[in-house]
Length: 551
Ligand code: GLC
Image (tube, rainbow, N blue to C red; front, side, top):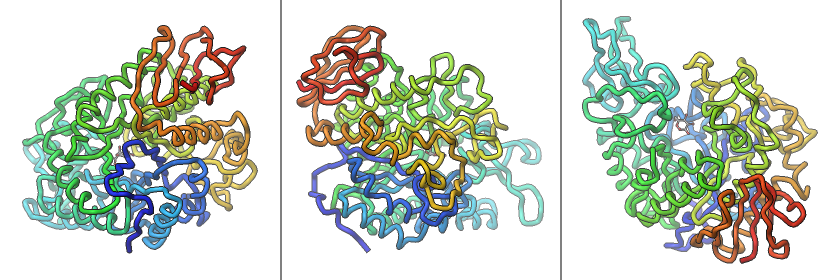
């Protein structure tokens, strides 16, 4: 079954300036009432996304999975997990989104499968050296009896990146590589059978009408020949770090995306590939979006840019330069399901960065919630004026903070368990979002069940509470998206203006954008105000505030 998107003019390259909204299916809306969100829940809430004014949805994984890493451990790439619904539900959701002129991008996880995937089960049952084992990365262990892992690599989630299997006769066997959890064995992408399989998976979703893919761990699929030992510097980010890393950013990955580019190009309607590639610099990330490769790559350097005029300007400038250099638009993103929500993160300090999640026992002062929200509103107001495509994460339009007080028993992120609780991990940004203040589970469903407990403060952030409330974050986002669309802002160029060291100011299209990072109020001409992330005080722009002015 296939659905043509109504306004998909060939060559329109809609993705260059699109605002793409990430739905994390388990936490968006739950029609079945079992406490985990589902596809029918999403469909029932599409009107609120149309009202918000987004162009596309990126749907985090909903395929068959034992859910050891919230669906990023796929056991069947061609079917929907019963937890989320059926393929018919997917088709209906896609058709309903398209009716509202909202495109839909599917999350594809090609670096690894679940250990429950038929291929991995077949590999376990087969002998060393067999074609079944060759789809994954099995190796003999080191040491006299193969009792040591084949190399020293560590899992992104903590602990060794290798697990030893037990043979059918009970004797210890080979080891397999998993850059993430032991339930997520890495494929061997040098194997043509793996490549052919994924071309077919791409076609499966493209044939159904999917508008493209967000490609998980797009920088990790090729490992350096010989799998050499590697010890990351202690300050390296778990998914990035200084080059060269034998499992991140290897040149061989590009050939795979060139191949995928040709598959997508066979389909009408400007289908898109977006890379999740954590790389140290924008220049390196830009290699993923050369004209014959992917279309977009997440700009994680921007996400972590310092909250200062200089830090933001540097990040924006280097992003635009690097991506323009290869003819691609820059993307912008402040929150997703892997990082502390920006309404909390922006209140953290350099001494207290807490990048791996925040919990009740995290040392140091709690981030100031009012300050974080204020900065988040200013940051988003700045971001949505920038040339290129912006990604939003469900709930940020409500100003949702990170949930800090999740009890240990409720936590589900494998990184929490694999580090013995040393890292709180990502559950705090994944709590089911509030729709109504006074309903069971805040309107997430009508039974009150919720796979992660929702805090009482979510009542103040519910969509119903914020709808029509003049100062609410939701109404700010609606204004931002409506003005952005009316003024075609994402398609424009940017010209910097000099308003002093604590102020970031630029022209784009018919708008002048000013963000004040400093303590002193900045005077603005009130008659030119289109919108402001906070009210002006005595005709001046207060600290941590962004204003859009008519140019
Ligand atoms: C990506 C996903 C993350 C997942 C990991 C392993 O980084 O965004 O949620 O845990 O890949 O698939």
